[in-house]
Image (cartoon, rainbow, N blue to C red; front, side):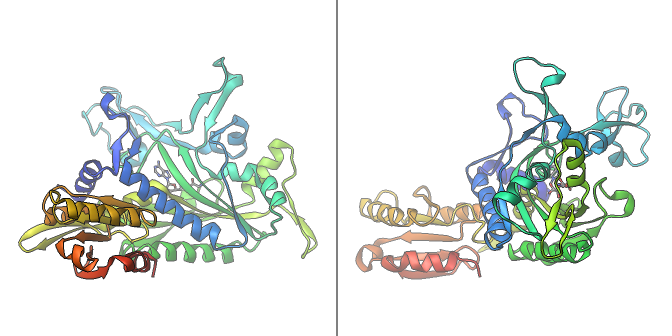
Length: 434
Ligand code: GAP
């Protein structure tokens, strides 16, 4: 099995990620997050929010609707530009992105003849209301950013923000990708974490460099290996229609370097377009400089699912311990879905399980924990290693005498004896970020 197959299998087996509607054969490019996956995803989003909104006075949050009217996408340019060139096989009717085909002339699946290149808009359409006609046409947002631009004035005014300031949002986006794939790398339904940082025109280079540094530092702070991350600068012909500069933070995926986050300088493109098409003036009066302008924007835009995939890949380690294979997910402790596992040494000794339940009760108030009494202690440690639980707390016969437990560290596998009374503080200290 290659690494991506190992991750896909572990993700399903241990409840991180499932194919969506699997019992009906699944739906391509759409996945569901299981009990551990949702914890991982929530931790990603919580840490991003804390870093972007929580620690900055001039960044505020927003949660805009997913469904937006066509005019938004006319203004944003997505109806015109959000297209993928594709070619269809005349024999099996499969469609491929032209970029994926490179110069191939035959269908990679069946060898059939490929048709001419056509463009295909990847916005997902829907209809709202009882009648399915063009008057009711709406789009599921293709990027969360537009929810921010259309609310620029509401947020600026209600939160009394002055340039430079940012509006952050986490939410679902939808794209009718022609070739979704590589597990959760390219999805049709996915989540984005986007910041639109509004600045004075002319200051874009300074802020672009600032956000590049900030965002790379954040990924490093999550423990992702430095050598697996790099910047990729977009060439002129690769820039999106709204950007004058863009650099991606790329991760070294098993199939090659791929985008994890894009940092773009969107100029005043979006606010100008929305001003023109909505008729509402979205310019800003800068009191300090005594001038009116449409703010420019720097946008760091990250994918929650892409980051979940990166963390699954980057944390996955196989080791040999006493002649046996150990799979361990070395998640950063704040990202780990489960923080502590409580394990009575034996399941059929009432006094041990009773004590273990007491410890469980005490800890469950503080951390997300698991209680597990099934199987040998060694197997239970391995189960926790495989989902990246940083600490296992074992209750043994001595615990009944000395009111202490054994705490085992996931990474070093070292064990320490800690008094039950000290356990909350002991674990709390170690689970904090360095
Ligand atoms: N607002 C700018 C924007 O949407 P993008 O480069 O198209 O830019 C930003 O997307 C991020 O969203 C990407 O870096 C990636 O992490 C994530 N993303 C984009 N398309 C995706 C897809 N089809 N599946 C999963 N994640 C995706």
